[in-house]
Image 1 (cartoon, rainbow, N blue to C red):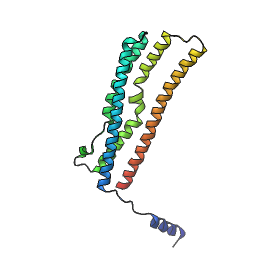
Image 2: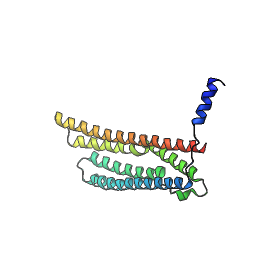
Image 3: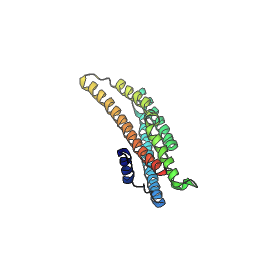
Length: 191
């Protein structure tokens, strides 16, 4: 026997069969995933209500017309985001699997959530950018930065907003990669 063949047999002997999880374990995991998604979405919807109320008030109370327009644009963006969240990432209960094998259902839901998270910039962040830009332009127009301190404050405000948006984008891409790992594990189990 050649050394290559000996190494191959030794390697094959060291590999154990992958134990498939029981249907109860898969079902429990699907239920837990569903509850987490439902909680996440409910938190997002509450945040949307708070943004709509706050920026709705700003639409009528801020002093500069661009601030009011930017606030109205932000309210509109919030409705778009809430609709997209429901359309792309709503929680689907495991009972909706019907006759579909539960492992296939779980995989489909993981793919759906991964795709929603991976495209978060386009449907979650981008809708807010025009309204925020107009709102900030109105804020600068209502109180133009006079000195270095005011200019620095405006730059810091923009940097904070960019940082928050960038952090949200990065975090969601991170979770999309984690979901992909679970999808790969299911694919390996099915092979």
